[in-house]
Length: 138
Image (tube, rainbow, N blue to C red):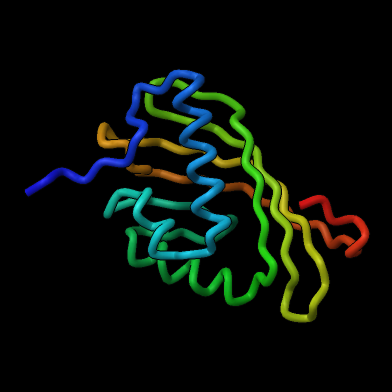
């Protein structure tokens, strides 16, 4: 049986940490829950705002529901810090809610990876800000 790996692998350098962040940004902007879930370990642990998500199946369910509610979603991530197997990012994303109003979400994520490059832990702190359509940046 082949061991599942997601490159680049830790330990991270600045270059590989930036690559990992860009890959995550690209995957999330695809809005494909199955594709996004493949970056996480089968037993991944998340905290997303006040919600706790455990395992890939719950990730897929969470993301499916998220993107059904958040229309015209666009995300940008930025490397903040990294160590051997951890990366911290700042991010912002914009979307339209069910009423059609625009929202910008800001936050930070702390990521921890296993030796195969799969994210074992993702802890996200996120704040929402209603914005006018003319204030959109993404």
